[in-house]
Image 1 (cartoon, helix red, strand yellow):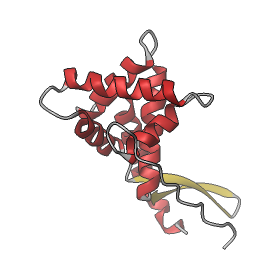
Image 2 (tube, helix red, strand yellow):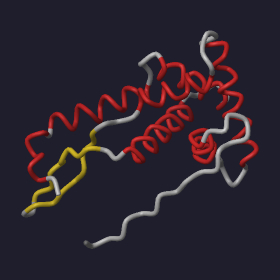
Image 3 (cartoon, one colour):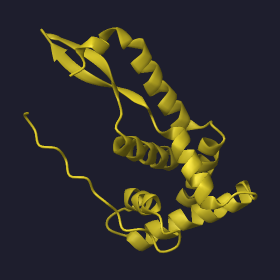
Amino acid sequence: MRRHKAEEHSFAPDARYNSELVTHLINIIMNRGKKSTAQRTVYGALDALKEGVPESEPLDVFMQALENIKPKVEVKSRRIGGATYQVPVEVPAIRQTSLALRWLVDYSRGRKGVSMQKALSLELLDAYKGQGNAIKKRDDTHKMAAANKAFAHYRW
Protein backbone atom coordinates (compact mmCIF):
# COMPACT_ATOMS: atom_id res chain seq x y z
CA MET A 1 0.00 0.00 0.00
CA ARG A 2 1.47 3.31 -1.08
CA ARG A 3 -0.37 5.83 0.99
CA HIS A 4 -1.72 5.98 4.52
CA LYS A 5 -5.46 6.21 5.07
CA ALA A 6 -6.77 9.65 5.94
CA GLU A 7 -7.97 10.01 9.50
CA GLU A 8 -11.69 10.27 9.99
CA HIS A 9 -12.61 13.64 11.44
CA SER A 10 -15.52 13.90 13.79
CA PHE A 11 -17.25 17.19 14.42
CA ALA A 12 -18.62 18.42 17.70
CA PRO A 13 -22.43 18.73 17.44
CA ASP A 14 -23.65 22.30 16.97
CA ALA A 15 -25.42 24.18 19.74
CA ARG A 16 -28.86 24.70 18.21
CA TYR A 17 -29.63 21.43 16.40
CA ASN A 18 -27.15 19.11 18.14
CA SER A 19 -26.10 17.81 14.72
CA GLU A 20 -22.60 17.01 13.47
CA LEU A 21 -23.75 17.59 9.88
CA VAL A 22 -24.76 21.18 10.64
CA THR A 23 -21.31 21.72 12.20
CA HIS A 24 -19.70 20.25 9.08
CA LEU A 25 -21.73 22.66 6.90
CA ILE A 26 -20.74 25.60 9.12
CA ASN A 27 -17.06 24.62 8.79
CA ILE A 28 -17.32 24.42 4.99
CA ILE A 29 -19.00 27.83 4.77
CA MET A 30 -16.57 29.43 7.21
CA ASN A 31 -14.19 31.96 5.65
CA ARG A 32 -10.97 33.17 7.28
CA GLY A 33 -11.86 31.61 10.64
CA LYS A 34 -15.06 33.62 11.07
CA LYS A 35 -17.13 30.85 12.60
CA SER A 36 -19.80 33.03 14.16
CA THR A 37 -20.53 34.60 10.76
CA ALA A 38 -20.80 31.14 9.21
CA GLN A 39 -23.12 30.02 12.04
CA ARG A 40 -25.34 33.07 11.47
CA THR A 41 -25.52 32.22 7.76
CA VAL A 42 -26.37 28.53 8.28
CA TYR A 43 -28.89 29.10 11.07
CA GLY A 44 -30.52 31.89 9.06
CA ALA A 45 -30.80 29.60 6.03
CA LEU A 46 -32.29 26.79 8.14
CA ASP A 47 -34.78 29.25 9.68
CA ALA A 48 -35.76 30.36 6.16
CA LEU A 49 -36.59 26.71 5.36
CA LYS A 50 -39.50 26.98 7.82
CA GLU A 51 -41.18 29.41 5.40
CA GLY A 52 -40.37 27.26 2.36
CA VAL A 53 -41.61 23.98 3.86
CA PRO A 54 -43.80 24.95 6.85
CA GLU A 55 -45.01 21.39 7.61
CA SER A 56 -41.48 20.01 8.22
CA GLU A 57 -38.67 20.66 10.65
CA PRO A 58 -35.71 22.56 9.09
CA LEU A 59 -33.26 19.83 10.13
CA ASP A 60 -35.40 17.15 8.43
CA VAL A 61 -35.54 19.21 5.23
CA PHE A 62 -31.75 19.68 5.40
CA MET A 63 -31.16 15.93 5.92
CA GLN A 64 -33.49 15.00 3.04
CA ALA A 65 -31.86 17.57 0.74
CA LEU A 66 -28.44 16.18 1.62
CA GLU A 67 -29.66 12.63 0.98
CA ASN A 68 -30.90 13.73 -2.47
CA ILE A 69 -27.53 15.31 -3.36
CA LYS A 70 -25.24 12.45 -2.25
CA PRO A 71 -23.53 10.71 -5.19
CA LYS A 72 -23.46 6.90 -5.14
CA VAL A 73 -20.76 6.46 -7.83
CA GLU A 74 -18.07 8.68 -9.32
CA VAL A 75 -15.22 8.31 -11.78
CA LYS A 76 -11.54 8.24 -10.86
CA SER A 77 -8.67 8.53 -13.32
CA ARG A 78 -6.57 5.40 -13.66
CA ARG A 79 -3.47 5.27 -15.82
CA ILE A 80 -2.92 1.96 -17.60
CA GLY A 81 -0.32 1.41 -20.29
CA GLY A 82 0.03 5.04 -21.30
CA ALA A 83 -3.71 5.67 -21.49
CA THR A 84 -5.83 7.30 -18.82
CA TYR A 85 -9.24 5.76 -18.17
CA GLN A 86 -12.13 7.19 -16.18
CA VAL A 87 -12.98 4.24 -13.94
CA PRO A 88 -16.34 4.24 -12.10
CA VAL A 89 -16.02 3.55 -8.37
CA GLU A 90 -18.51 3.51 -5.51
CA VAL A 91 -18.30 6.49 -3.19
CA PRO A 92 -17.72 5.81 0.54
CA ALA A 93 -20.40 7.23 2.87
CA ILE A 94 -18.12 9.88 4.40
CA ARG A 95 -17.06 11.15 0.97
CA GLN A 96 -20.71 11.19 -0.16
CA THR A 97 -21.57 13.56 2.67
CA SER A 98 -18.52 15.75 2.10
CA LEU A 99 -19.15 16.02 -1.64
CA ALA A 100 -22.83 16.79 -1.10
CA LEU A 101 -22.07 19.57 1.39
CA ARG A 102 -19.29 20.96 -0.81
CA TRP A 103 -21.51 21.05 -3.90
CA LEU A 104 -24.31 22.65 -1.88
CA VAL A 105 -22.03 25.46 -0.69
CA ASP A 106 -20.34 25.92 -4.10
CA TYR A 107 -23.63 26.33 -5.94
CA SER A 108 -25.00 28.57 -3.20
CA ARG A 109 -21.97 30.84 -3.59
CA GLY A 110 -22.56 30.81 -7.34
CA ARG A 111 -26.00 32.38 -6.98
CA LYS A 112 -25.39 36.04 -7.62
CA GLY A 113 -27.57 38.90 -6.43
CA VAL A 114 -28.73 37.27 -3.18
CA SER A 115 -27.17 36.95 0.25
CA MET A 116 -25.38 33.70 1.11
CA GLN A 117 -28.08 32.97 3.69
CA LYS A 118 -30.86 33.27 1.09
CA ALA A 119 -28.84 31.41 -1.57
CA LEU A 120 -28.16 28.49 0.80
CA SER A 121 -31.83 28.20 1.78
CA LEU A 122 -32.89 28.31 -1.90
CA GLU A 123 -30.34 25.65 -2.84
CA LEU A 124 -31.49 23.47 0.09
CA LEU A 125 -35.13 23.87 -0.97
CA ASP A 126 -34.27 22.97 -4.56
CA ALA A 127 -32.34 19.89 -3.41
CA TYR A 128 -35.24 18.89 -1.14
CA LYS A 129 -37.56 19.04 -4.17
CA GLY A 130 -35.08 17.07 -6.29
CA GLN A 131 -34.00 19.89 -8.56
CA GLY A 132 -31.34 22.60 -8.66
CA ASN A 133 -27.65 22.77 -9.46
CA ALA A 134 -26.38 20.37 -6.78
CA ILE A 135 -28.82 17.67 -7.97
CA LYS A 136 -27.71 18.31 -11.57
CA LYS A 137 -24.08 17.85 -10.49
CA ARG A 138 -24.95 14.52 -8.86
CA ASP A 139 -26.81 13.38 -11.98
CA ASP A 140 -23.87 14.40 -14.20
CA THR A 141 -21.50 12.42 -11.96
CA HIS A 142 -23.76 9.37 -12.18
CA LYS A 143 -24.08 9.72 -15.98
CA MET A 144 -20.31 9.90 -16.37
CA ALA A 145 -19.90 6.75 -14.27
CA ALA A 146 -22.55 4.97 -16.33
CA ALA A 147 -20.92 6.04 -19.60
CA ASN A 148 -17.58 4.62 -18.45
CA LYS A 149 -18.98 1.34 -17.12
CA ALA A 150 -16.90 -0.49 -19.74
CA PHE A 151 -13.75 0.39 -17.78
CA ALA A 152 -15.11 -0.94 -14.46
CA HIS A 153 -12.78 -3.97 -14.68
CA TYR A 154 -9.83 -1.57 -14.14
CA ARG A 155 -11.07 -0.92 -10.61
CA TRP A 156 -8.34 -1.35 -8.02
